[in-house]
Length: 95
Image (cartoon, rainbow, N blue to C red; front, side, top):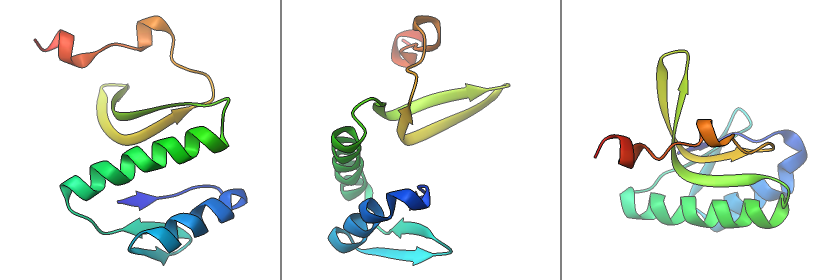
């Protein structure tokens, strides 16, 4: 898993580096983990980010579509939360 945050979040990246089995390569933080550990890390990251960036909105396992390209994001964040038409539950569509 790769974590890439702006440099002004250096303290946050340092905390992640110290708490997880992480490596730093070219100013990006990489965490090696299995699937269950990855889910736990995503949950913890979401909670930590939510505490530090209270005005932002966060979600886990988001599907994002940009010009016919579909991306599945592990943890995503928005300064302006998606509008109702953009915020669709894919599980209801695929059911």
